[in-house]
Length: 215
Image (cartoon, rainbow, N blue to C red; front, side, top):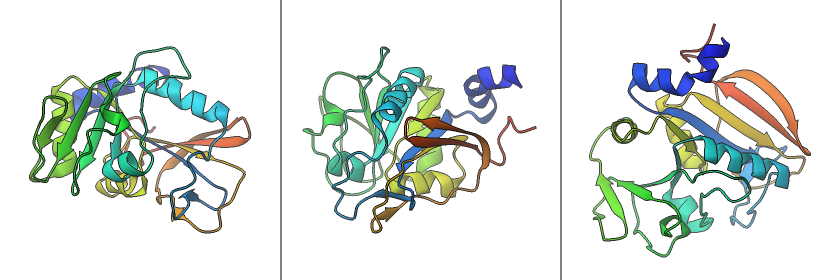
């Protein structure tokens, strides 16, 4: 079991021909991941956010959707930990690309996957996908030597991976706060493999029911 855990990324890449996919989100005690107006930039604690930066340094790539790029404008780099920046991945299914988003600054490379009319520029590489969007995206990342991917959301992007069954592990922070109204966290049918404290937050880790690594 320890050997499988240590090599889960390699085995997934070899057997499934795609990266090991880690879903990650933070939610309130009433299972909301953002306020309706997206004014809630941070839900998890400073300690939890530092842990996320450690995870970024450990994985090959990190992915968000267009709404998160526009609303939250994250850098997706390693800042609260010492380590290399992951490849940044943006998925676009509608709307225009803004070259001024932080995900396109020069600290780390960025790939954009689109099913729309966007085209590559000198600063932004756009890979067009016409069908089987997520499987084709993961296959392309695999062909580039990417064996692990963190999906940081938002809700619609996380749900698309869950609905497609294209995930292996989920890491969910639950903070001791409530919003009462907001955007709901995705529903997850997973096997809980651990639960621990992360400062005031609770970190729960789930594994896909059909994981290669279930006993």
